[in-house]
Amino acid sequence: MNIPHKSFPIDDAHREPLRHLLTALADDHLILGHRHSEWTGLGPILEEDIAFSSIAQDQMGHALGFYSLLHEHLDAPDPDIHAFTRQETDFSCCQLVEWPIGDYDFSLTRHLFFDLAAGLRMETLSLSNFKPLAQLATKIRGEVKYHMFHAKTMVSQLGKSSDETARARMQTAINRQFGLALGMFEPRVGEQLLDEANIAPIESKWRDRWLEALNAVLDGTGLHIPDPERIEPVYGGRRGYHTEYLQPLLNEMTEVFRLDPQAEW
Amino acid sequence: MYGGGYIPKEETRKTVVNDDPDMLAAFEARVARGEKVEPRDWMPTEYRRQLIRMIEQHAHSEIIGALPEGTWITRAPGFRRKLALMAKVQDEVGHAQLLYSAAETLGKPREAMINDLINGKSKYSNVFNYPAKTWADVAVIGFLIDAAAIVNQVANSKGSYGPYCRALERICYEESFHLKQGHSVFVYLATGTPLQRSMLQDALNRWWKPIMHFFGPSDEMSEHTLTLMRWKVKMATNDDMRQQFLSLYVPKIQELGLSLPDAELRKDADSGKWLFGDPDWAEFFAVIRGNGPCNAERLAVRKAAEVNGAWVRKALQQADARYVTPLA
Ligand SMILES: [Fe+2]
Ligand SMILES: [Fe+2]
Image (cartoon, rainbow over all chains, first blue to last red; front, top):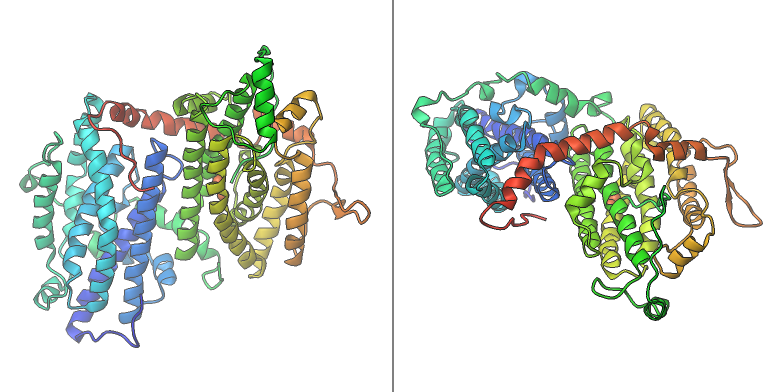
């Protein structure tokens, strides 16, 4: 990205809420990118190995983009230091992205849930009054379209398969992680302020659109979502409360970097 | 990566098929003229069989080769290295895909090839039976093993079988980027902190033996070898490829002030050939027989991936619509 000169002007009242928004986006993409990359060499077919690797690379690239915005406009450290040296409690990813890859049904469902939300977020954010974010969101939006194409193709093929095991596995994966998926939309600190300033909507608006879009995606696949009113969203991630899976992930991710964070790798 | 030049000998020789002598003569004349052989063309039975073995082993080497480096993707230090390594390993899996489809044109389905890999009937490059212990191993693999593979793959891309040559041309193009990223990691470590340098020297010491093994022992100049060379299945001798590799890369390693764990390694002024100490071919053969440090682990991981993914492959076969290749 080419940002002419200094930072884009940000109203003082918006700095903290914007920091929360961008950190949540950056951390979600980083951690899910990490998880997706774990499929490398282990996919159920070579084509899926390659697809998950592409998506993981995009997620990492998107994370880098969000960390760069934090660095350039909100005094955060440079992206490597920011991503590779923070404490677990300073991460604000949702818990959905922390879970191990599990079997392919779990990972594919998470990929659908996450990228559907990411697509909607980027669509709105491409109109954000915080222009640097609008530019980045526009770019990311184009890539997320491919992710969604992939997720929809695979989910619908497995959902419509005449193979009963596949259908049951997919439905179970949806049911099991639905609460975690709703957790993607945990309210953010100061979200109302950003909404009023047309920088980013409050999370519940995104959640409502996501539910609608998800029903449309699953329509005709034989798969369905559980009643969202009866599922407790898994919150906490945005405030630094994480699953037992995040710390080991961070240990692994930073293993080499920590040997010498000042060194050039 | 990762085609090693070495194709292990078969334990049991198959019965010799006598091809029509006129067809055989016409085939050999075509190959001698430098024409490419295409899937529907007549070809000697032994030509087909050897090519399937070779391309299949090359494909297996790509997917097994993705494992040692793959374990470092999640640990790569910083975004730049992480993104480059992910893309690199993804390419290797893509190479497997290209090569399996080249081998399929000769009549063996991918599923059958992967089954032969898992049950140990079909081999892959020995070099991947060694562990990648530290981040510096990623540098050595990406720089030197990819470099060695390029020597082999460039030679093979001038072979006689059209689909294999075309796959290799695309592969070699991507390999040149792998070499660049491997070299970059290598140079950063070599010129970095004392810790980084010592990691790299240690990795180089551990990998040198498998690298010397990479092209296999000297070829026996048997009738069989000569036939494969005449048919342009085998394009260069193992020794020639090894010499080429040493000429290109030993100076680059030494320039960076690193040493190689072979006191006898030097270029002979008279012959212009590299001389080296005994690379321990006994170990090489032991690893081929399955007794390397990681043979069991590599196959177990591959097998687990196949078993865990079986339900997906089964369901896709039964999906209404055909599978659409998504992103590659
Ligand atoms: Fe390769
Ligand atoms: Fe390579």
